Image 1 (spheres, rainbow, N blue to C red):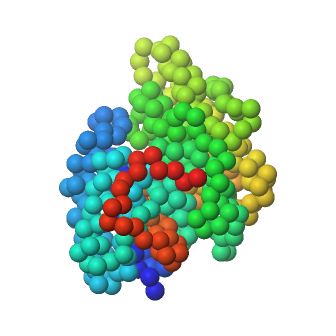
Image 2 (image 1 turned 180 degrees about the vertical axis):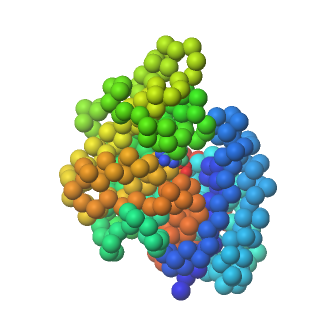
Length: 338
Ligand code: KG4
Ligand code: ZN
């Protein structure tokens, strides 16, 4: 039995979890900073790192209490060291180093994007989970506030980059358009909610197919929404707001699901893994399931957005492969997966 304490502070959630054998969540605690950043309509890096400093010790203590474990029961400490905001990552990395050094435990450094993929190895009772053991090759669509990438996974730890966003990430587009529409931060869940009462074909917003490559672009779409909103003196409300939200969401979902379906077919994968905060989107899930010929896996929303359980799941694979970080491990804000 391998028990790993995992820490995640790459963006605006202070999170810690204890995961057993990369699958069983013994505890999973997330302290969200959403309300702090909502004032600014987005993440304020300086405020994020200060909030992590305040939250990290209580979050780790609570995680250990909920797991009913002492530090002596752990086999390793894992932490996200990139990509993300430097000042935020530093809080998690230094906490993990302190704990590992103080308790004489091995330290494992984790890539946040890889952790989002490994959320699919966690055992949870929920719709969208694989009915049997996942087999390679797999296709991962990672869609979050900072990333939009299509990744072919050949094996544990072996990744091939197929394409990604050339400008805004999908979640960033949701957040920016949410702000244009006068909706609260984060824009993703807010847009999904108002879109329920809208007509997705009310506005035909542009789709950037980019010569049918596996790359994405959302900045033109954001500008197209801005052009409509600019024509009105007040923020959109009622039917207009619902139609704008539904039409924007449809444009994002159309391109993400179509390119995922093309890649799933071209690379003959056994399953598609929807990963990251935007994979909580109901329309993205439904449309991808409709278009892709193999099983499409998704996680409960709390495991789509940032959390440390996914870091623990990923760390187990790295740990059994013998990977250990040195005390000189640094944060890597632009760390890549492939
Ligand atoms: O993975 P995540 O928690 O953080 C990053 O690693 O960036 O993703 C956060 C992003 C935000 O941009 C948020 O608007 C988006 O995920 N998001 C959603 C939904 N829930 C969260 N986007 C669309 N629909 C949702 N239901
Ligand atoms: Zn994330």
